[in-house]
Amino acid sequence: MTAAVMAFSMKGAGSLMGNRVVVPMPQQRRLIRSSTTTCMAKTKETTEVNFVPFQEVKPQLATVSKTDAPTESFARCNYEASCEHAMNEQINIEYNISYIYHSLYAFFDRDNIGLPGLAEYFRNSSEEEREHAEKLMIQQNRRGGRVKLLSILLPETEFNHKDKGDALYSMELALSLEKLNFIKLRELHRVAANAEDAQLADFIESEFLQEQAQAIKTVSEYVSQLRRVGKGLGVFEFDRYLSGQIANGAGPAMGAALPAVA
Ligand SMILES: [Fe+2]
Ligand SMILES: [Fe+2]
Image (tube, rainbow, N blue to C red):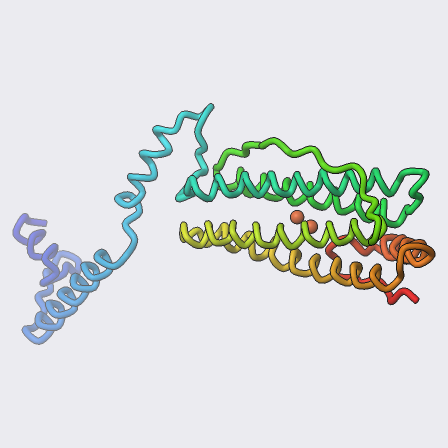
């Protein structure tokens, strides 16, 4: 093929058939020109609109290549310090509540209190709050944040109340803690929303808020029932019903309210 034929062929104005150069008719040339122009316009348009990965990834690549592996996360991506800090605070709240519930478990498990249903209920509640703390830790690490455990306060150890008795007083305390936790979770959600962190906001909504609202409803019903039954035999009956509920698989936030206590 001569240089002239090659140049002609590459322009798209003609094509080779065997050794012959086939030159298109004027009408065909116009069509070829117009389709080539359309194709080029489309390519240009596509390039302007579409994602250009090797250009756009450069800032992220720079952060990864500069990351100091022993101290910094590779996974961290648009995770604001405000969110990381708020998550560590919520971990601490869950641990504090877990510790108080554990103290309540120890109280109701005493031989001179003898309410095994309430003891088991608060032991399960304590474990559940610790699980919440751990769930938050997993999320913190998932986003490349650093889990920082904070101090937890010494809980009370005596839960007798002169007028209310121990069971009602303890359940009202539990209700107050669950309500406080709901407020704290909504504050955490607000921090995530302010940072426009959709993943964190969705995590709090789907994993915590619904369950927390249900826990408040369930504990509220326990408080109502304990108010009805008084401090003596009624508490003993309530404790037996609670034991039965736990044996049937009802957890602290499972939403399974106790049957009405006679
Ligand atoms: Fe919790
Ligand atoms: Fe809870």
